[in-house]
Length: 190
Image 1 (cartoon, rainbow, N blue to C red):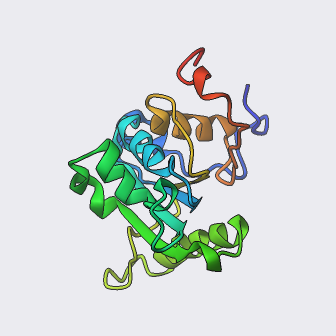
Image 2: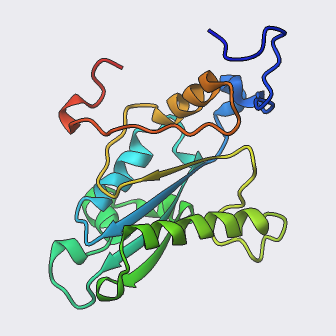
Image 3: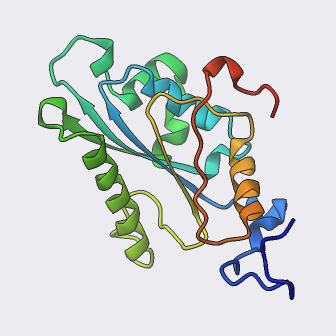
């Protein structure tokens, strides 16, 4: 059922080009991860790329808060753990990930880290026409952005599902949120 007016006009739903799966397959998804000494972050990166229908459209920004000099696996770092434990050919995605390392002792909490990630996306949007200023990938209004925890899994083809769900809202300003289910439930009853 449509949430639009009787005349079919949706006042806040104008960008519909990527409703078509062929057009949508290359629309970038910007993923933001605030990690604090999380040994599962490498697995999250692996799942983000391996479960996407088109992993080349996934761009990940990470604030990686670790303890320098620590031997703990928690402090190995997201990207290093991804490369060592999950993808020995991680160079295939190195241009799609930007990590900012922060000393965990200087951390000011997850909200602070998430605000820094949002600022990174904003910077890449403001400077989208100046390639020398782009931190990771130019951001356009029609791109998708998702902020996730550093210990997540994804349903198969979640990238297509995300865009489909967005269009079901019939609102360009929609926010899609979820309470994360137990990992044992992943890819069941989709």
